[in-house]
Image (cartoon, rainbow over all chains, first blue to last red; front, side):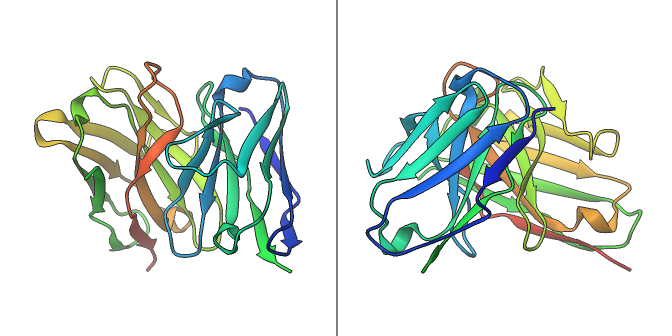
Length: 108
Length: 122
């Protein structure tokens, strides 16, 4: 099983700042199979990024994904008020699919 | 409108059973790979199970293997999760999720239902 470790657990930033979220895998896998999701309180997860760097339909270009091997990053270039949420990475290259524990981006 | 609607959650005693349903609309359900994911209160996301469009390929997480059964009825545009031998740690919101159309069995989840709450308690 591929274990995904997200860091930091919580990121305290102000609107307009840049957010950098990390997702590290316990073993290398094809970067094509890494996704990022956003979940706001009381809401359903929303797909942001698939294939490590491809934005899902309707996702603003301030969200970008990068990385390969075991280290992946989600970057939010300038935080908007609606971006404060919990973010999860997921690998879907092989079963069992796994999610990271999440990073909460909170308003400083 | 593309939509997934779960139902069937509720309160069940430890050791009991429950069957969740997920009704799909707005897309060709029979062509889509589907999954179940859960989220315990205040916790992160946990993948549970995958079923291919024709139900020929099925995967389970170790935490539910042997207790949960995923199935689908393409004629009814519906996905199911039969949950047996339920435990307190199965308490969670259960989501069904559609795999994005990429030609692969496994891919990211682009559509999620609103979730149904399952509480296992005596």
